[in-house]
Length: 165
Image (tube, rainbow, N blue to C red):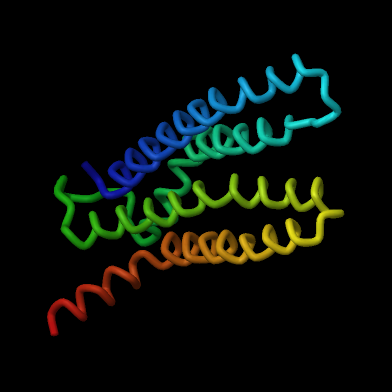
């Protein structure tokens, strides 16, 4: 297998994982929505359902752009490669890139949920303050995910350099 094929396959596995996670979370939220409707309260919990859909949509997007993302992971690869094997460094690059995508996929629904909760609970000062403090962790996870994804080559080189010393 070529490097890009391995990267594309890994991204597609990650996308399937994200879609399945979204379905599982949705299955847990639907009873809450049904109980809210049956109790005829004024509370609207449909925004929880929206954050579940974000996970599924992110998984579908990952699947659809897996070829382009694998091209980003291995920018310098020529169209024709003589061998079929991959090196350990190339496999590490793919795995770190997938880890970065996982962090992004894991944090984006959290970000949407926190922003929706801040909007809904903006009149409760202590709750809003707690949500805003939770926002810092989610933003950190997004930044780390982006850095790990975009700089996987550099990270692998750095780790191999420190390992050799």
